[in-house]
Structure formats: C-alpha cells, structure tokens
Length: 290
Image (cartoon, rainbow, N blue to C red; front, side, top):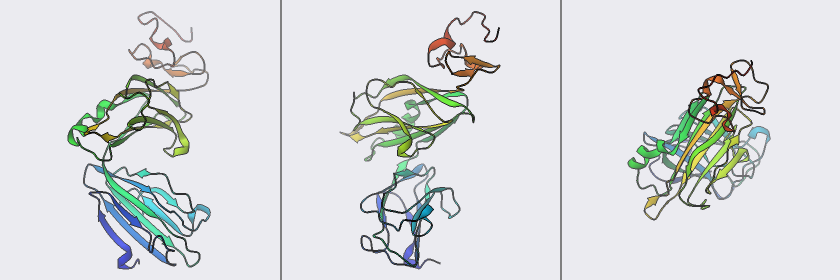
C-alpha cells in the first residue's frame, strides 16, 4: 500500500503539477505513488510532461514507469505507460477523472518526471456511421459559456466508419479567419490514432484539401488561441464518407477509380465522392451494374 505522502486526491480547478519524489534529483527505489485527479463536471483534464523526463527504460515499461488511466481507478482504460528519456506527447482524458501511478523497483533510479495538468471544457465529440459531419458550429454553446479561456480551446472529433472501410474527408466550409497563422488557430487530422506520428495533415491557410484515410478511424483536432480578449474562432465544416478502395459490390456506387460509396448517398445533395460523380445526372435513371 502506498505511504500516505505518496497517495493524493487532487481537485483540478486550475493548472498544477505532479512530480516524482525528489524531482529533479533521483527518485527513491521501491516506491509507488498514486494520484487521483478530478475536474469539475463538464471539464476534461489535459496533461503534458515538461522539463526533464528520466525513468528507467525497459521493454513495455515493465519496471519503473508512470502510468495514466482514463478514470479514477487502476482498472480504468489505459491511456499509456511511460518510461525512458523521451517525454510522452500531451494527452487528454475523455471524462473529468484521471488516475496516475508512479512506480519504481529495487534497482536503477532516474531523475523522474514533472507532469503539468489543467482543466479544459469538454469538447470531445464522437461521430460514427457511413457519413456525417464535424463542424465548428458545435462549439458555439461552449464558447458562449466560457468566453475567456486563458489556454484557448482544444477540441477533438473522433470519427469512425464501419470496419473494413476508409474515410474520405472533405471540407465543405473553411475560413479560419487568419491566413497561414498557425499560432492562432489550426485544424489537424490524425489517421488511426491521435499520436503525433499519425498526423496526416495540418491546415491553417486559406484551403483545406480533401483527405483519404488509411484506416476506419480519424481524429480531427481544432485548436484556437485566446488572445487580445477574444478566441480566434473560425468556421469549418468537414463532411466524412465511408468508402471501400476495391471493386464495387452490389449496393455500392463507383466514384471512378478505387472508391466505392454506399448507393444511398448518391444524389443526397452532398458531394460524397472525391469528385462530384455522385451528384451528377440526379433525377435521371442510373444503374451501376446494368
């Protein structure tokens, strides 16, 4: 059982830090520290590691490590287990609770870690199906509720289509308001996971080209900085469509090339193909397999 000084419940109402024992000096051997963080309802917890990160390296971080879980328990969904000397990428909970554990065994110490946490308004959205949208208009109630956010606003849409399909993403509305000023606002798209290595595109200019994923899950991140007494809000609307990149089966429409979409999306008033073949000749009889 962790000693009392190394087990703490933290109510997250502002930015704070957690450090490994004795940081930045070497942490003690045979130590286990557990922290349970809780933000107010309607908020999530943003975490990033800054400063020195030095924890004994091992395969799958089996020995010394810091572990984050998305909830208040040790059996909550695992966010990540970290060790070595490369600081993890920033992470964000899906709810208002975070479980943190630091563990060291009997051999080999390191300088440890410093982890910064802060509350953020919950603007995580999940959308699934064969088509749908992610749009900045979803944020209006949130911006009206929190007009002054010192750290800006960092929102994510998790889009999933049926397994075996990929995602065609097309921006039907696009105006971030500040041409090529990525330090004020930007949109990022991640393919399969939200780790930095999986970032497929970052948009902050006056155009946002179409994008086709390699998997059935994408993440859209919209970041806005708060500056000069305003949020740098812009406008975007992203239309996603599930497609198969193989020979079209019955019930599927060929977009020309290796892109097949569900026939129910043809002539629906939205361009779901990469090119507008699905919205041509609407009102006329067509047959993909005649």
